[in-house]
Image (tube, rainbow, N blue to C red; front, side):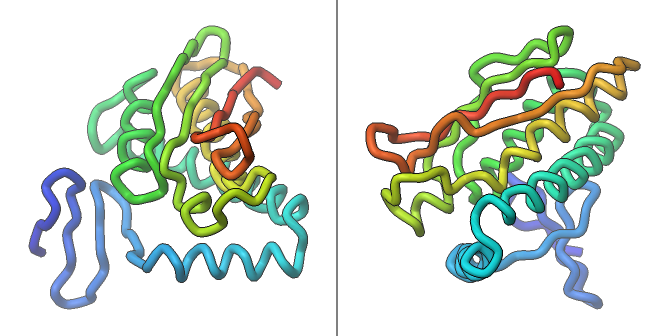
Length: 176
């Protein structure tokens, strides 16, 4: 397997063509392909119904990712969340910045600049980054679980860079 892109370790198995970053197999697709599929599903289901589906799926996926990455890199606590935001940013979803995080309180605030969804949708006057919301709660809850905490959280997008008056998105995580 050859390693490319040292800032994001990617290995490609020469026999199977499977891409792997750190501990997980990956897919590599053009942004327009992914976002156009997202829009197509949204057109059929409606943004609210699709957001609910994506929240649950994203929550589960983030939990799994954080668990595997923590094991792979020997990370725990806030370092897992920081690593997750770094990897999301390196993969082209946008630039995620942790503004605040408090594991004891089960809270976090994350900003998103250069969202892949905002790049395609533009200024449409509504939140278009809802796909990420479940990711933050899933990551937080996996970290809390690993610490032995029973606390669980919910995440929401406060606003999006696709809305007038905002050049970035804002997400919050708080206890259920």
